[in-house]
Amino acid sequence: MKVLVTGPHGFVGVRIMAALKDAIPAPSLRDADEDEIKRLVERIAPDVIIHTAAMSDIATCERDPEGSYRANIALPVWLAATGVKLIAFSTDQVYSGCTEDGPYTEDMGVSANLYGRHKLEMEKRTLDINPDTVLLRATWMYDMPVYGEKNRGNFLINMLRSREQAFSAVQHRAVTYARDVADCIQAAICLPGGVYNFGSENDLTMLETAMWLKQKLDLPVTLRDAGERHALWMDCRKIQGQGIIFPDTVCGLQRCMNDYGLADI
Ligand SMILES: NC(=O)c1ccc[n+]([C@@H]2O[C@H](COP(=O)([O-])OP(=O)(O)OC[C@H]3O[C@@H](n4cnc5c(N)ncnc54)[C@H](OP(=O)(O)O)[C@@H]3O)[C@@H](O)[C@H]2O)c1
Image (cartoon, rainbow, N blue to C red):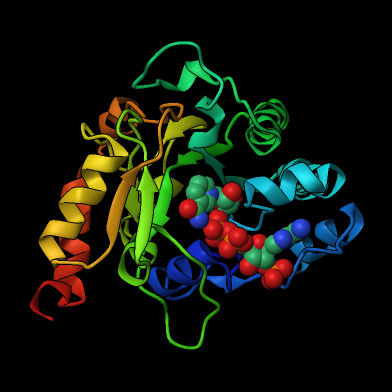
């Protein structure tokens, strides 16, 4: 099966490229228009497109709504319009405006930020174009840096390198080991079209999760309560029903610590 991966040098893309050895990396699509996308897909003729390229920072999207629209809606819509099966990443931020407490199921999205609203619109429009499209709502992901690739902060890195971190004592939210996401991507290709919560679950609050990691790794970081934050935890029974099982947040962190020998340092 020929798999084309967009954003192959991004945080998730690098790990998907490593997990799918024969996948074809797409060039940067930042300046591509619909015709260029069509030509690219015709030239490569993939069976599946895994779309990770995005404007994925909430604050950047708020500052540049047109850029966010282009990256987070137009680009995946153009990819879906090629008719090739599309696996596209969405986000747990689609739940940031829900009035319910959660955990949230796939039918519940209401977002309080532009990034999440654009992802919701993207989900709907790509599914309208091609009902076979698979939309993966991912949580905040973490991993250690990959040698030679750009790095950006994530839950684990922030905990390892900061003197002080603030997390909410009431916010229920999961974080997911990015390698678990990459390991599940092959199975995601075979999913029936639709929207899926795709990541770890978490019964702990973010502050409890951070306290667990601090204690496990004996980290010097000082943790404080960030106060009220909207819940983002996901109910992952739909994806579990398809045979894709992520470890819960604490088990994922433990696996990551084992993979890197972090607990032995
Ligand atoms: N990282 C997380 O914790 C997280 C959490 C939830 C959901 N997600 C979603 O998962 C997917 C992958 O996330 P990620 O963290 O891997 O993303 P990322 O590293 O921020 O970006 C992936 C790639 O997108 C391309 N890109 C950046 N700005 C763009 C723009 N304006 N137009 C077109 N392409 C652009 C870049 O590739 P080039 O430099 O080659 O153009 C970049 O390497 C995204 O859809 C994101 O929204 C991520």
